[in-house]
Image (tube, rainbow, N blue to C red; front, side):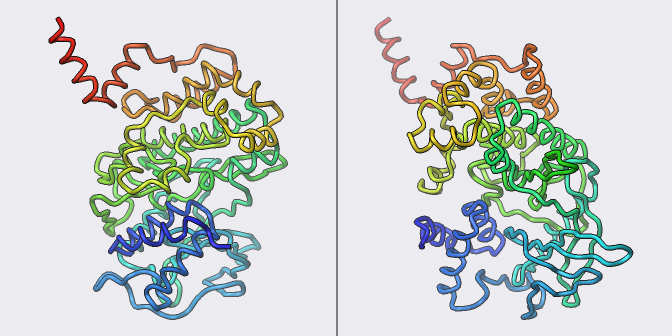
Length: 414
């Protein structure tokens, strides 16, 4: 069955000349929807009339060799078992290691046809970022190398899990249990920030929940578009064109949506954590993906940068009957009880993360985690409701012309 968004994404993808920009846009627009991504890639293949779905960049890619991996392929000391993931630049396989001992691992390798210098540099940057970190809630890098054809790969700890939102819904976790699972996610991001790494793509599919000794443990994965704040991740150059949108729009901070990427700091991840928390609590994002995809490119950026999302408790009260049924079916509490739980403190915590002005967000991911912990303990939280003056100033910024006209009329009348 044809996905209704496939053609729209296909036509917008054609606007990008750069291979990396086009792949990044498709990755964000499809947002983990494998069926949608496949349909878009087929449209691109039909358009180009070739197996290579993306335009080549003269002098910016290694020699192409028409070989592909699959179950049974041996790469170094690893035997591929099955594909378990796919991103804009790489494919992830479950693999089997026999030396020096038997072990299941995850092996990530650059896609065929995606081995440009820029993508190889970013791939290496991801490996270096993961190698810098040592945290129980971040997948570890175990090994790295290159295939016989020169395509780099790296080997990671295998995380057998599901996206955090899917786990919470399937297990019908309560609001309290969801918050308890969210705290170590913040702590993992705090660890990355302390190592000078900004994730830039925090979303449910990049926060997997795996069972260790029967206990659910969230694991942050995919640092494919991570940015270093105080060090170079690799001696190769990772170049991002000005105006290129990197990340997933529904989880993207207003400053990240600007596209320059020159002034992104750790508070951008705080915003994304806020979107993730919003979704864990309400079952939907502040700006749903469908809404953003249906908007034009400029309108999508405007929404992210200017529009104020409804509070989580307000969103619950405005859900359609099917949406309310979905929330009720995945929570032990009913809509009315969840809405009561969200009002006040949890609303304030989430909305502090989602501030357009990053100076008004939590300064650190650990600060967010501590506030959630305070809420769970019944203690006073740091996040406070906005004053009427603050709300009025935000309204004035959004409707500058209207307020300017009203001020002018007031002056004339005075």
